[in-house]
Length: 233
Image (cartoon, rainbow, N blue to C red; front, side, top):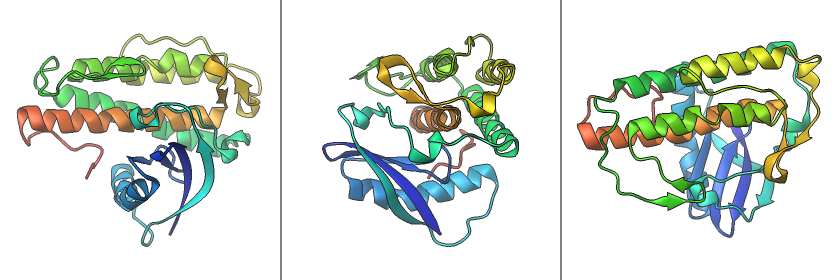
């Protein structure tokens, strides 16, 4: 089974995205390290979706972008070539359902952490400020990209309520725009290109980044009773 990978890198530091498994990704100090992680990522991703894995995952790089961003901290501005295409209604509904499932599962993981303000992780800074350490900080950071992501497509969304609630409201607002499935590629903040396909992928991808961090932090801090909702390996 071919995994159509998009490679974004700064020097050798690598973000590798599975273009045909929306939101699946790996990171590594080199391309080879990231490639070596991809099979496990796809197994994890399919287990989370509750779908079988059809054969042995074989990653193949189909697009490359050299970036000046701090990709080691998951800073990204890439638009996949495939994300320039409009969406059909059925594909949109399937991807929206995945983005909503991801938000609900993220909220469930957060709810399962015994102490939302306790963490064993040391303090560390990145391009966007201090790395979220506690479950509360991780949850707020992940939820609060909602207005930013939708805003890149001209939708005035908010970050109120749970991560699933504000995401669902954002999609409802989006769907009130005329011909929303055919919104052209837009150049938004920081001169970054956005499309509807990219927005859907970015939600699931961003959730996975911080769900993995929250799950691993919680296991280290509180022990092995944290539910592995996303089936991370």
